[in-house]
Image (cartoon, rainbow, N blue to C red; front, side):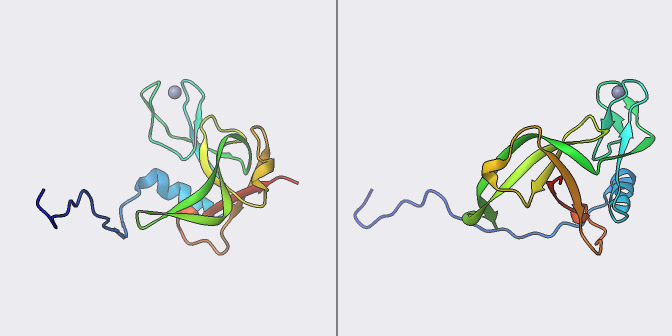
Length: 153
Ligand SMILES: [Zn+2]
């Protein structure tokens, strides 16, 4: 390398895209139900597993899923992590208050749903804790109409 020459190994390029895509009939029905404060899932008539968010095919049985069932609105924390940073346009930022991200098994469901848990001290989160859904009011016809979960009681 010559004197005064610099090495540029990488560059940060913040990207801020807004996506608008067709969600399909299963997620459309799921989102509409969230607006009515209901969490809808689909049940496999072969293996009996209940999937939320709903999907079209059971990957185990290779069967089209067309039996709709309501699940929740309460469930149990199965796995969790505590976040101390957030991503903002591709950059990591430290946050003042830690956030709890959990995989919740809703009552009546077989699959786990990723959720934000509010109203709980991160020191007190644990596997098996009962939580309930809190919906956005008024609904915005979005996946985020299921805003977060909070402890039961
Ligand atoms: Zn199945």
